[in-house]
Picture (tube, one colour):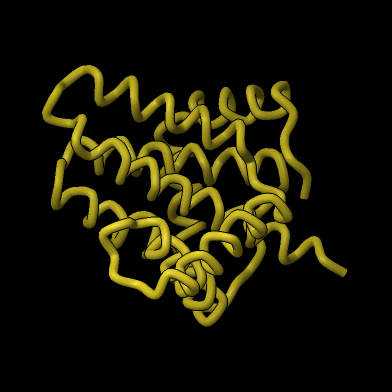
Amino acid sequence: MHELTDQELYEAIEYARNIDEDTGRSIVEKFQVEQAALAQTIFNIFPSLIAQQNQDMATIFMELCFDTLCVYEHAFGNVPPQSEAWLEQQMALLDVEFQSLIPEQQMDEKIRSRLKNRFSERALNEVTQLRLIEVMNESIDDFAAENTARVPTVKFTQTMIFTVIRLFSNLYAQTAKP
């Protein structure tokens, strides 16, 4: 896997956003069958967390997750198989790292510093689709700007879409390793 060029990203996003409803439904159903744990996390658990704060933001989040799924499949092929254990491991790593970024979270400062450094190192050493994250964040910002009730949920929604993109990046990178 490689970081997508602007042209590749644009083409993949255009592909995702121009899929008809029947094809879209088919893509999601296939994903839910072949990647049950990941699909449950992305399309049920994460949106329900966002919906606790704002239902509109949960809806746009699911749309952006669909776009993300389509971008990766268009650019890199079918989603590689993964186990529930893999997903649990990824979520545990991300959870601990995210906790270290929350100043209000009680944590030994040495541990916080190490986790922040690990988070930064992993972000720099892994292939992460930074432009895709930027595009998704812009979409979230634009959607939230349409209604001020959505604004308090922007950062949380952006964190969740970042998590989804990182999960997909890790999944595809894992299968690319020899």
